[in-house]
Length: 397
Image (cartoon, one colour):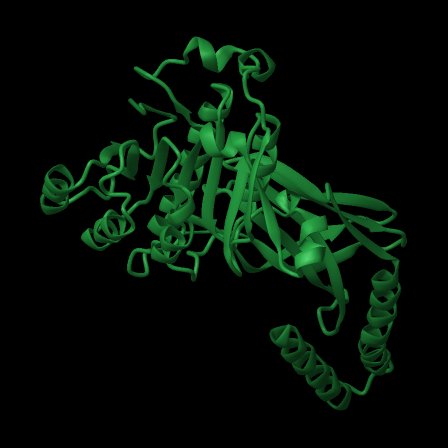
């Protein structure tokens, strides 16, 4: 825009000089026309500015990871003159070293007179989560590119990228159980009967609170169900790991833990058993008891929109918080991208290291050191599974 103003100033100066050099009636007329052009151009820009309408559609998109999708930006011009150019500023997708993200970008376009145009904003996200495409400013220029008018906008489109569904099956093939419907797989022997009462612990579901007894004792009391005592597995998901500023690997491992946890949960529920998921939430450690396949959808929704940054709560705190009440469960899965000796010693202190049925799932892209494997074999009863985080299948046996 600066160069157009300079060019116009030089042109006016040239015409002014020509008026003095050539004593002609034509030159003043040309100079007057030149001086009036910006005013005419400004009026047209002003009318265009107030006749422009912008909207986005759809307002929400649900997509798979690595799926090509678009948000459409509609611009409508109600005036007789074209609006060109239009500068739109917003958060659009950019590519940086193979990683997709949203950052501030400028989009230039135009709209013909008495018509509308559509601009596609494509995206293709490699990580699950919740994203937002925002349009927060539009600028309209006059025909001579001497002036501009700016309007603040609050347009947005919500993008939900779903976790990939993995299958813990044998030989990379779907089993008969995976192909059956949840209603035909869930067994009917579970009673879900009331068993005992205990004090409320962080992470307990509010639906298990005994409200009448809580009111009498003036402290939270939780109902312990027979099903959750005798027929549940436990999954600890480590969302705290990060890899020395490598944001791409950190988010990849966060997704790997999350997707593996969902896959194991789904398998257990399809077998007719209950499962307790424990993870680090934003403000506190969380625990969710899923006792039937209908509960899987809720957990899937919660995990989909978990923050894409590592949790500020330590994984050690999660183990310490919930380990006292889960020793009675017959199977415990610990899913972590980094298996360290410190974690194994913590499991030893909590009594889980020598408990039958404890399985640690980690990922081959990171790997486990020989020293750690030796410690596992010699000092614990823990079973170690290293799986490929990029494969949709893995074996739990």
